[in-house]
Image (cartoon, rainbow, N blue to C red):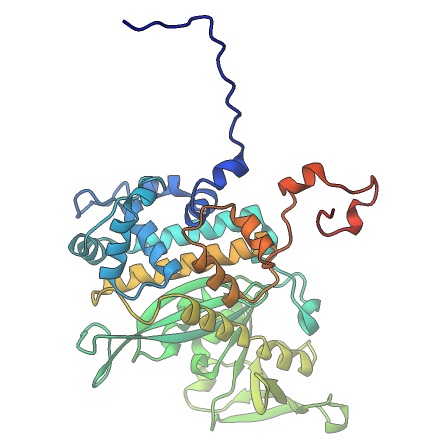
Length: 432
């Protein structure tokens, strides 16, 4: 028979603070819980049919993101990780492990537009919470464009491992998919994205890409997108463009600026009309033609640009085109820090699932870097996050303790600091 002491005082258990709870879960769990809108996923998939038993859309999306965080090379490796860390993942919004066949079937049969919609939903969420994250201030000579959005339009080719894939056949023994992107020059983030065949010319996607721009926006394009018919349509909409001139373009000079009035590194500033049989029909009005000596990526080039703006200085037109390099930096970030070299499947849906998972992971990592005020390069930041994926410590404290970021505003050490009153702002961290 058991004796119960009813007069025994109940022991006091201190409440676990938010910082304490963070130290009890992994850094990956903190990222998912604090930055990912998981409650929106059921709304996106309510009309979709689940074609893999006991493997939800939530688990599929989170595991694909985990594969990007860890830079996993194969689907077998990702499936093994999900089973090894099954207990840890189950605490992260109930992520279910999956074997290779279940995961492969989900990537092959499910609609990748779910991941695409979720990406843009997260993009709008970050933009509404922190407008400066998406609409950053332009730097250097472009700082004068305070009220205008500047977008760089370009494409990149992603090679696929299986040369026998018919839907992505590029050359005789190669398969690839081409990603066309409109990137915000100031924030270096995707603004619009569309896929195409690798052997398809870039100009065929030009009109779709331009539809994402509004009147007053500035679009910067390489000469692969120099198609005068869509350029004329966008000019009538009020979109300003700067595009490289194609070789052997037939035209006549209507007016030109005297050479003694040209700025340094500007060779010519002319107003022209197209005289080709097809081009003069496609673009019947006048264009501005600027030839300049431009430094791009440490090298100087003599380049000629076409634009529909007749008011800005010729040096401004040349400076705008230099800003197009930001989209190349974005492509470099994506390819070097995420898993876009080894794809988990040869099916078109599987490839799209992985690409959108990579873009979403890149967006979240850039937002965490923005919120933590990390001063290091993006590549070092991603490598550090990858190293502490399973570490059970407060992520912001870890970033601060290793010198990746300054201390957060709500850092708990500020509650009891040894400063003299009134001198707190002169010290970076607690001393003594």
